[in-house]
Length: 145
Image 1: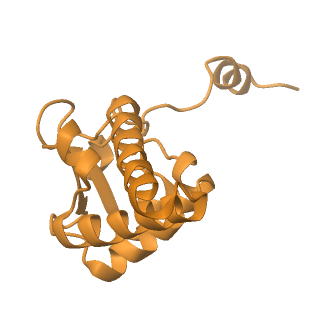
Image 2: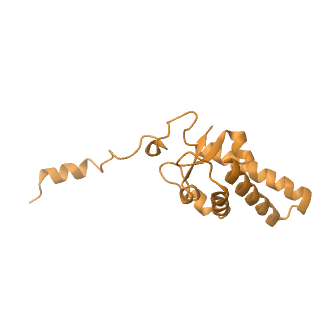
Image 3: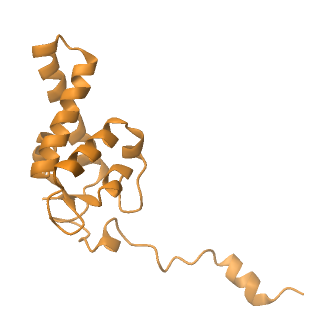
């Protein structure tokens, strides 16, 4: 015999009490403003700015070689994000990369993050907090400044 409680719990759907209301809530970040998680729009525009700058540099010095574009982009990401916490595109869009403990990523973390961004797939697989695999790998978040 089927118990009515079993049917009622099944009909009411899954337990949603542990689902966060906004990206970053589980990580202690505010919903909006400085310190909140950077949303996809800002991230994509920052990426386009960085790629565009890499393209312009490659045209000026390497005859637009596609490998040079990728190498310049990777170097920018490794050095600037690793040492400063932001790339040129991040700075323009008002976002920065910080570790979960609030410190700058560091050069090794910048290298790992840049290599994963260049592979593309890790950057487009995101969790509920809008953190791609590249950010999860180095225990970082991309926040608004």
